[in-house]
Image (cartoon, helix red, strand yellow):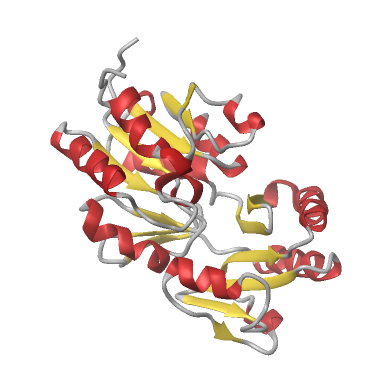
Length: 270
C-alpha cells in the first residue's frame, strides 16, 4: 500500500555503505532521486559527526547530522546545534564496568576521540572508517568530563555481550547502551538513541512520524524503526532486527540500501 514519505532516515555502517565503507554510485543516485521527488534524507550513526563529513557533499545533505546515535546534532557545516552529555556518575560507572569486563575503553568528548593505545583493537579500522585518528590519553578515565559517548571495545564477542548486559542492568534507564557492532558497546546519554533521533528530526523538520521511513541493520536501529511510519531492515541484519521492521531489503553487499529506496520509497517496479 502506497504511503506518503517525506523523510528517509538512514543508518550508515552496514546500511548506507558497503563492508568496505564505500558509498556506491547506485546509493548516491538513489538519494539524489529522493531529493528530486521532494523527499528529504538524513543520516544517523554511532560515528562522530566528523566521521560522517565524507557524505555531506556527495549526498548534498541539508538536514541535521545525528552523530553518536543522537548524542550530538550538527549542521551540514558541522556546527553543533545540540549535545547530550553523559552525567559524570553514569560515565564513571560505565567506564568501571568496561574495564572490569576486560574491554578497552574509548571516550568521545567534544571533538576529541580518546584512546589509551593507538595500536589497540580496532583503532586502525575505526580511523580508516571515520577519516581521522584518535588522540592518545594515558589515563582515559581522567577524560570522562563532558563525555558524549563511551565505547567498550573487544574481540571477545561474548565479553562484549556480558558487558552490555551488566551496563544495562547497573545503569538501567540512566543511559543508552547497545552494540553497534559485535565488538563495540556504545554508551551514550539516555536521550541519545536512534529513536530520539527520529523524534528530533520529526520536530525540527516538522515532519509527522508516520511520514518518516527508517532503514538500518543493527539492534540500535530498532528504536528508530518504532518511531517511523515505514521501517526497512537490511538483508544483513539479524533475524531479531528484521522481525521488528515493516519490510526487508537485500544485503549491503548487494545494493540493499539503493534497492530499498527504489522499491519501497520511490515505487520502482521490480
